[in-house]
Image 1 (cartoon, rainbow, N blue to C red):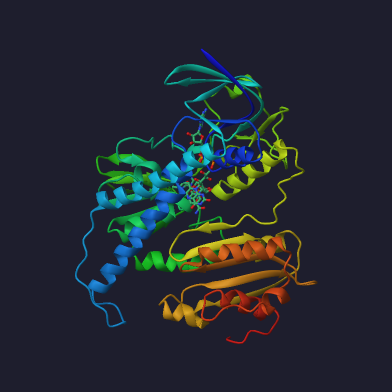
Image 2: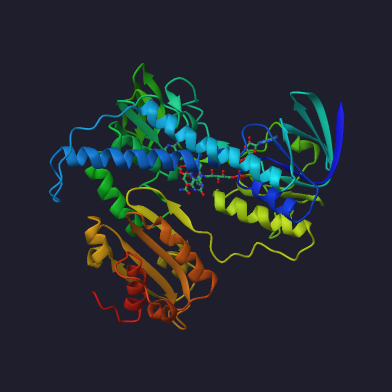
Length: 464
Ligand code: FAD
Ligand code: NAD
């Protein structure tokens, strides 16, 4: 048995854990990171990156199909395209490989020791890891739990065979002919749309009364329209009861009606749960928030010297939140004064069109008792959107009625994810409507819609 000691031990090398470890290394903290699977965690291996690669491939393919069908108004025609999903997946795996190798290199450069294996708590300062070379005991002054999350499994539809999670969906070698997606949240809609574009007949079953319940109805409407154009069938207010026969699932609607849906693959995307099992957390008995580890604004758990970051601490389960928490914890361990007091954590749903949301929606602001002024600018009045043939969507700015402080910005439109940075910056910098309205935005860009939404809230939009 080998034993090592260090100042900081990070468990899990996802975007929470590896970023925390790299920052700690940069700050001169003697750091060890333990990873049971592959460096980069869910995000790099089976989440953010591979899903966006597949979405891009699906967009390329749809464009080619559109041109070959003679539907383009641009005077461009093309030959009928073909698709080899296995090659698409190999390309995607290449990107994942480059990034995960990059994580190992970054850890090395920051002089972080990487240990491959599953960590198990022995007590609040000690973990053991079964490595290829035998049992390793690691003692640390400070431990950061960054073990992430795993897909939620439905009791009536356990994973296996035709019932798959996003992980298996991102490794398919053939496009399913009939795909049933259970859950119309982030993953269900991102991957459901991609597979529809790649040629699958897709049906999405959602328990609640509408898709993407996380976002307000106005924001989701352009996405619903596009799904309709793509031929995606949406069934809301329904749950899947289980497998009906070899090639079908049984569903039941809230009004009690039962039916079956043909499916050669059933993708279950009903949420993710914090990874808190199987590594001896019970040995240290931390306070929990449901299934998530409870943390304060410094990501401290109920036990001194133990922090938790990322998905294991619950919603919002987003890579950039995990990384921001990771940086903060490393700096706290280095003795700096920090707190996780961000005004905004942007949410982006990579649907078609993309949805971006930062801060409060008009409804959420009203519910919080804030009297608001709202400005909406439709992309149909934006020149750049016209040149891109994507006029569906809008930018919406929500500000306090009294002093015009911006409290929320939302947008829906093709490729608007990149605008999330401007939106988050505006909120973090405490921008008022006048600040955005008076900032010169380059022409022609979709971002002019942001400026015009603020101008419109002030009654001064030019193009509408
Ligand atoms: P993880 O990335 O889950 O990493 C945790 C790591 O800990 C894993 O590598 C695991 O193997 C390791 N581990 C667990 N237990 C142990 C143990 N006992 N010992 C050692 N190691 C252990 N988020 C976005 O912001 N944008 C997106 O576009 C996006 N797309 C997504 C698409 C999909 C299909 C999925 C599934 C998720 C997506 N997410 C997205 C969410 C994002 O992946 C997570 O929020 C993010 O990965 C959380 O980072 P983390 O470091 O907390 O955990
Ligand atoms: P989700 O929470 O986004 O959506 C789950 C959906 O399933 C909800 O609409 C819910 O009402 C529905 N549902 C729950 N039980 C159901 C049932 N029995 N039958 C039918 N519908 C049911 O979860 P997800 O899509 O699995 O994603 C998990 C997490 O991963 C997200 O919360 C998000 O934090 C993260 N993620 C983020 C991105 C991004 O940032 N672009 C992309 C993918 C995933």
